[in-house]
Image 1 (cartoon, rainbow, N blue to C red):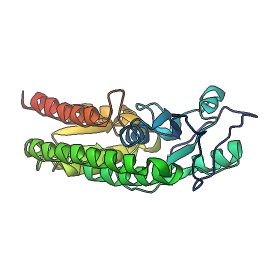
Image 2 (cartoon, helix red, strand yellow):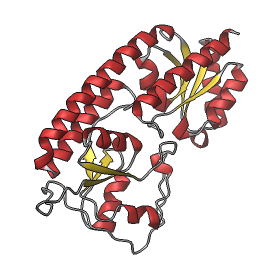
Image 3 (cartoon, one colour):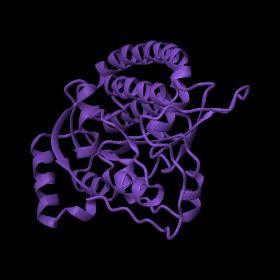
Image 4 (tube, rainbow, N blue to C red):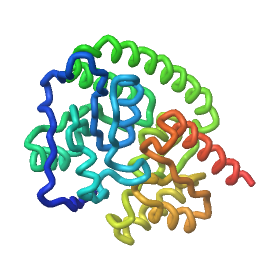
Length: 273
C-alpha cells in the first residue's frame, strides 16, 4: 500500500478551477503553467503543449508517487498554476489540492501502464483535451502537437513489436506493476509479487515455488516499488534480476521504453551464459 507524507503546514496556492478558460493579458505570450504529479504527465504536457506550456513535475521519475513526501518547497512550486493534473488513482492529490488551494486537480482517467504505447496514447489524448479546455486559444496547437506525438508513438510501438520477438514465450517472475508491459512484449508471467514490505515469508516462498516450477528465466522488478523483493527471489532461483521503470526518467518516455527493452535483452543474454 502506498502512503504519502505531506510536510506542509499553512501553505496555500492559487489554482484556477478546472473547466475555467485561462485568460492572459492582451499582447502577452505567457505560457500555461501546469503542475503535474508524475513524469508521465510531465512528458505528455511538454510534448502536447510544446511552445505554450510549462510543466512543473512534483514527483521524480525514480520514486513511487505514493511514497513521496511533499515538502513546503515543492508545494510552493505549484503556486499560481493554471492547471493541476493528476492520475485518476492519485486520490490523495484531490484531497491535498482542495486543502491547500480550495480548488480541484483534474484527473486524467486513463487506466493501465502508460509505458505501454497504446496506453500512453490514450493518456495523451486526455491531456490534450484537458489543456484545450483551460486554454481554448491553444486548441489548434494542442491538436497538431498531439497528432505529431501520436505518429511518433505509433512508430515506437512498431519498433517494440519487432523487439518483442526476442521475448515472446519467455517465462518470468515479476512485480505486479510490470505485468502489463511484460505481457505487451509477449513474456509469460509465471509468478507475480508485490512490494517487499507487503509480503510475508510464506508469500515469498509461494512465489519462488511457482517460479521454479515454471523454470522462469528472469525476475523483473519495478524501480518505483524497490528491488528488495525481486532481488531475493532471483538469488534463490539462481536467475538474472532486472529492474524496469514504470515512469519516464530524465530523458523522457521514449528513452525510458527503449532502456527497459535493452535491460531485458541484457538480462536474457546473461542467462544464456
